Image: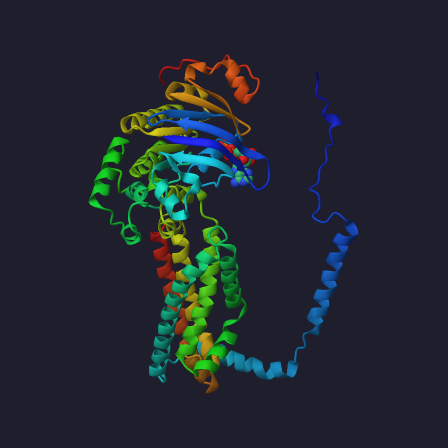
Length: 257
Length: 269
Ligand SMILES: Nc1ncnc2c1ncn2[C@@H]1O[C@H](COP(=O)(O)OP(=O)(O)OP(=O)(O)O)[C@@H](O)[C@H]1O
Ligand SMILES: [Mg+2]
């Protein structure tokens, strides 16, 4: 369970990118985070695992105050927060297997990771996840030899290797075609369901958010302006989040793509 | 509505870098005057040239009659010494340049460490090899140890600077991704940075190996050992054919090194 209390971020120059966000995400719930460019969506995600240091406010994961942790404590806590990126953020010159196993770095010692000698259980786990995301047999391919959709699957497997209780997902489909986007969203949703993971997914595609998420929150200028079920995302709500626009062209019940 | 093209200007010029015309022309004229004066200030001693030209010609023509054998053992000893100097100094240089390069990368190192590493690199790069070699010869006496230390010191600055620049240009995606797995700092460097900079590090090291071998031929002149010492002796005795043999050997070795390093770089994409 993730709880944000009064989370605020002010970058060195400029206004608050995030001001006083309160949010509770129970286990197993997938939340889509929507909002215009610059609203602070990425900032919210990065403040949660402190890739970006919040200016004030609290982040609690399963009751532990992440914001109060020392550097070593933070490393341990980060293991429980898997992250998935828009540009996949794989290490291109390494093999798919090394990329997947890198999800275990928080658990193994330096020399074991240096020699790529991961515990047998980790290796089995890695093969299992590769199979699960549909990449069985790809372990020895280099990451830069994969297509976008395949890369994102590796990114998902890497995040799962951390045995996370929370997934932080920053625009997972923005670099993918519409069909692959749907497949990736479906995969993330299934995995969250299987493993009772909470997830926050930043997404620009409102139709996709509606179709897949359990709950939608809207951010505007660093503030939460919408929080509700996908059905509650009316044209008025969209106007509150994005500003006035003709929303009638938005397919409001796109069942499957 | 009809578009009347004639209302738009038909001429356009790229704005000049320096907008004030007098300044633009002034700088050009001053530069030309200085260049003319500088050329005039270099004196040419025609009498000395008359003596020197045939001597230079004799040196050049001896390349067609290189003598590998009269001092063959000295040449081999010199080359072996140079190779040993080259290999050890390059290896040591790389070993020291890796931590130095990490410390000199702005995106990794805290400010004080960054400044310290940059200062070490700057000193290594400003001090010319010959000056450093003279210093080490004074300290450790004649011989290849002084040459080896000189080349190590030079390699370290060279590799560290270019490595640091490569590290500063790494993609941030993988950095964030590995950081968010809970990896330690060393694991982070090993997984997120090393794979990205490895081709550059290998390329730089091979290139430096090449430079170090050529430098070792010069350092001998100030007494820092290697094939340079052999070359210096041969030139001192006016044995131009032996000198030519030495230079040809150096060229051959450099070309071989060039070719093999090309092959290695090709494999490491
Ligand atoms: N590293 C940074 N330094 C300074 N300002 C930043 C930094 N990162 C983001 N910002 C600012 O913070 C605000 C929120 O940015 P953020 O990246 O969180 O928006 P976003 O909602 O993710 O936008 P997008 O949909 O375009 O990804 C923006 O005004 C941005 O300019
Ligand atoms: Mg963003």
